[in-house]
Image (cartoon, rainbow, N blue to C red; front, side, top):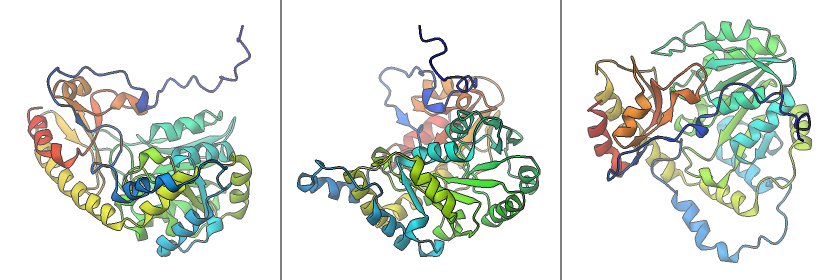
Length: 366
C-alpha cells in the first residue's frame, strides 16, 4: 500500500555505512578487545563526570536555547588561532547532524560532488541521499597515499562540492594544511564549496585546523566524539565565514537540536585540556607499537597514516581479515563499510590502555 508513497528514490546506493556491518562471530570465553568505532580509548573524560555529579540541580523542564550561545562563545575563546566569531559557529546534533543539514543546503538532484576515496562513508551517503552524484578521486591500494596531485585532481572536476575528511577515515592520514588551503583557493575560483570534516581533528594541533583558513567557500566540521571523549552527548559544530550559508543553516536546521545537558557537557569538555593531552600521548604510543608489530608481516599492509591519529587501515593480500580478527577476539570496522573496499581490509582504532599489550600479542599472530 506504500508503493510510491515513500520518497526513497535516493536510497538505493548499494553501499551501507560501516555501522551497519554484518555481525561477526567472536570466540567464546575470550575477552573482546574493542578496536571498532572511533570512540576515545581512554573512555569518559573527568569533566563529564563532574557535570554528572551536579546533574540533580539541572532543570530540563523547559526547552533549550535555539542555539547554545555560551557554547559558541566558549568555542571562540578556546580556539584563538581560528580567529572566528560566535556567528561563524553552527552547532548541531553531533558532527553527523551538522553534515546532514549541510548536505541538504549544498547538494541536491543532478549535482556532482567529489572527495578522496576511501573516506568517511556516512558523510558521502548523506550527500548522495540528496540526489547528488559522487565522483571521488580514488587512492591506490594498499598504501592509499595522498599524492601531491590531489589538489589538481579534486579541483579539475566539475563538482559543486569537495568533501574531505581530515584526518582521513579510514587511513588516519592528515592532509597538510597548505594543501587544504591550495584546494580551497582553487575551488573558490570555480565557485565550488570545500567541506572539511575534522571529526578526528582534535588529534592534530589547533593551528593546523582548516578552520584557520579565511575563505568564504570553506566549511570546517568538528566533533566532540573522538579526542574529546564524548560520543554519547551528540554535539558537533561547523565553522563558516560565509554569512549567507550561516543564515541558511540556521533556518533549515530544526530548533532545539542541542539539549541543555549536552551543551553543558560540551562546554566543560572544551576546557578539559589534561584529558585531551593524555589521550594524544597515549594514542601516539599505542599506534607506534601497533604499526611496529604489523609492519613487515607477510601478506599484510598498513596504509599511509599519521601517528597522531588513533585509526589505521590494514589490508591483507587475500582472505577475510574481519573474520580473522574476530577469531582473535578483536572487533574492527570492516572494509566493506567503505566505498571501494572489501573485508580483506579493516579499519582499526587503537584499543584502551588496559588492553594494549594483549591486543599487540594477538595481532602478532596474524
